[in-house]
Each structure stands twice: as structure tokens, then as C-alpha cells.
Figure 1 (tube, rainbow, N blue to C red):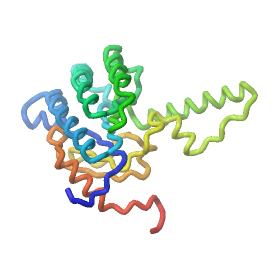
Figure 2: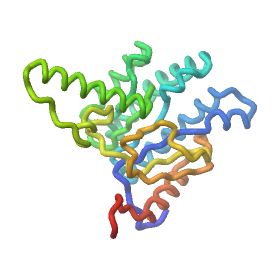
Figure 3: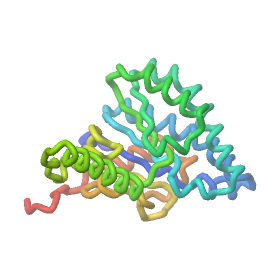
Length: 240
């Protein structure tokens, strides 16, 4: 990693390739998911070391609910186990833990562990680790539009003028309200698409694609992504 690297405020990662990693080793997909936990830990450590303020991880999409029941149940159990095991790590490293997504689809047991970890870390001021769980970009947009419409209808009912909708107001209705948009999106496994992820928030995000499968992703791979990001000329549609 070069010395003059630009450190992004918010990095988001689409953690892809667990299934292929497992198949290459003759195992079931859950084997890949379990081994991907180490990559999550290393990525968090690296983000803390480099002073990244927000690290969001695309852990489970709305579309993933259509996967085989055994895999979904195994993933949810792994989520519970991971939250329990990492709570002391969050405390020691001043990490604030958040989960964003369609909560109604998650099990009561998982929601309980998530809520406990979020409450315990709410006052931490270092890295904010955001796990996107049962999330999709289209769902987020529809949910935001529905919430705004409900507020507008309520304003009319009270005889008031509905708030004028602009980009800033619409962003406040998204699940990521209060979180800066990602500066850098990393996707592992060689796939070059964003798979219905943060469609609004990634309007000006820099994309970095690597062939490394997620269970093999290490700090050196994260460093390569930051090096590439530092070489980008971010113009936001303007002329420099």
C-alpha cells in the first residue's frame, strides 16, 4: 500500500464468492460462509487501522431469501453466532455496530442479539460497522417513497402543505439516513455488477472489482483497493 493513499470516509463491500470457494474445495456453500467470517474480521481491523469511519457489508439481500431453506437457516444461525462472538471485539476497538435492512423478515432470536449489540455499542465513536441484512436497493427506494407518501398524506389530513420533496429530503427516508454515501464499493469474486445494492447511495461511488473470492480476501487485498481508489479523479459530473 502506497504512503500517499487517500482514505475514504465510507467503504462498502459486496462479499461475493463464498459458494464458489466452497465448491472448489468440495464443500457445501455454508462452508464458504463460515470461512468468510475471518475476512469480515480482517476487513474491520484494516478499516480501524486506516481510520475509515464507515464500513458497510452486504451480507444478505432480499433476493437471498429464495435460496434453499437449509442454506438460509444456516446463514441466520451463523449471523447469531457471529454477533455474539464479536461483541467484545466491538467494545475493545470502539466500534459502533449497526444492522440495516428489512427487519420484519429476520427471526426474533437474531433481532434480539442485533438489538443488544447495537445498544451496547451505540456510544462508541470509532469505526461504524454496518451490516446490510435482508436489504436491497429497490426495496429501500420503495420503502422510502412509501414513508414520504404517508407523511405527505398525514400533512394534508392536518390541513398542512406536504414537505417539498428534493434529494436531501428523500435521502432522509432511506434506511441509510445519517450515513454518508459510500466513497468506494469493493466487490469480490470477479463479478462486475452491484446486484440491486444501494442504488441511490452509489450514484457517485467509485467501484473496485477483484477476482479474489471473499473467504480469501485479506488486508493486502483491501490495501490494493485503497491504492486504486487513490488514483481515481472524482469529478462528480464537473470539469476540473
